Length: 209
Ligand code: GRF
Image (cartoon, rainbow, N blue to C red; front, top):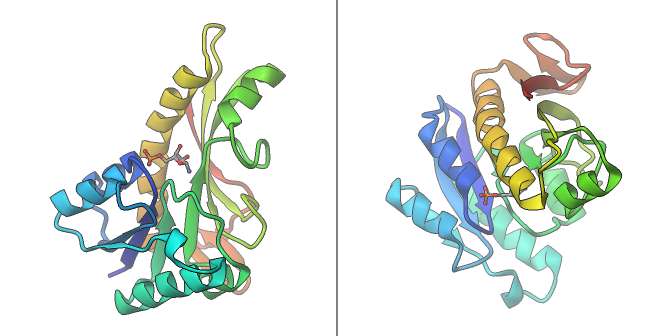
């Protein structure tokens, strides 16, 4: 059974979706870099062990990441899910978990890496927007995309309504990708990412137009 650790910093609605999905893997622990993160409460309500590792208490990124790494080893995690974790990870940490760590980003990558994606989509006047689940690599928001949720931007959308609509899609595609990894539908191999045994050329698309 896949042992999953989830890294959070905030509200944890994606964590909740993962908990509610009854994955075939088991969520063995949740790490937050913020003691006040509501995600911790969600984990505790579901009887999932939690660890608070405050980045502010460490002299540098590497030292902070090393404590997280040790915690993940202690839980014997084999899949790390970033769910609203708002820290950039060191190259060393990313390397250690390469092929075993995924993230969800609120844009249709490779468009709009980084922050404030909803406003940037509106500023550009794009008609489509959404979210992407991808493997984490050293370059920010640039690892192989596994799934995308796509929606149509409405004339009356603002950054707030777009964020809410994208969140609904996130809560569908993130548990789905996690389950695909748990049950072997998606495999990270030395020859690349496989989806149902074939090389994955494009992310699986989910649409809510
Ligand atoms: C989501 O918008 C996700 O795309 C981004 O961080 C946010 C996390 O939200 N990576 P939540 O804490 O899961 O509610």
